Length: 157
Image 1 (cartoon, helix red, strand yellow):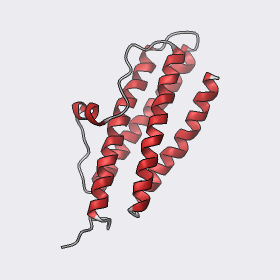
Image 2 (cartoon, helix red, strand yellow):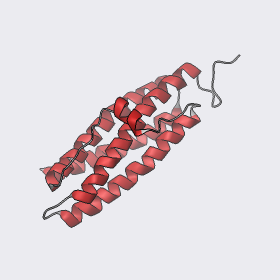
Image 3 (tube, rainbow, N blue to C red):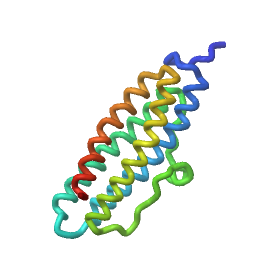
Image 4 (tube, rainbow, N blue to C red):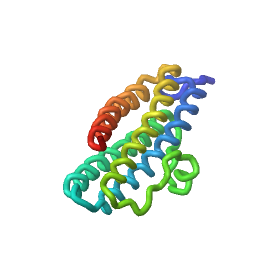
């Protein structure tokens, strides 16, 4: 019996990666809902600018939710799909009743900073497992989000 999965990765490594990717998925889901809430509820002088930007960001986050879930399936595992499970394993918390534009932007910035930390951990695991697919996917996310963090910091300065 082989100890590799259908894409040739060691099953133990694939299982560990799928577990961490499920944590990533949970964080993306909660982060997505936070940014969606900022989009709906932001008020103030920057309303039009932020409302549009938050829509751009949550649309991208939703795409990543699907991509992460599909990567978990590609590894031969099952993506978590219940919000009750997301709340148990995610580090990002719900951000409720936020309306002020600056507070919303700070919430987005903090969310991306948490996502970057988790994705760097997954990138390291993927590299150790010779999982180029996961490494490339997460590496692309890191590159994009580092630039977004820079821009959000510039906005808040």
